[in-house]
Image 1 (cartoon, helix red, strand yellow):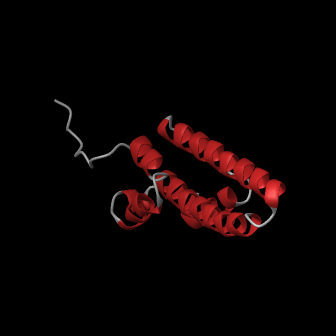
Image 2: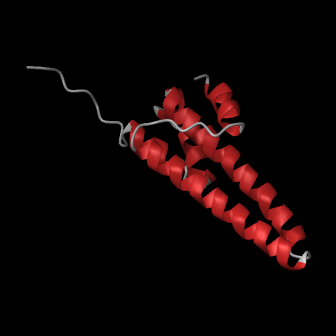
Length: 115
């Protein structure tokens, strides 16, 4: 009879996908074992944290762009739409077990994760 392996709770793909739902689960996955030793989960957690940082920086820029009548609104809307689409792609790829590397922050996340 084969020996059963203990369940750790979430599958790797579920943990990778959940890491993108705010930075809080991402930080939890970086701290709690066994997720903090899995390079795949660590990559997605770090990429989520860096993506949140980019969203915060863009939010500050969008606040400044409010003072530019039509062009500022257009740039803000396109930027938020782009970030939303990028986030959706990351979530879908992570839940499917794939890795979507965002050009700059994905490389930083891979370096932090050791992957």
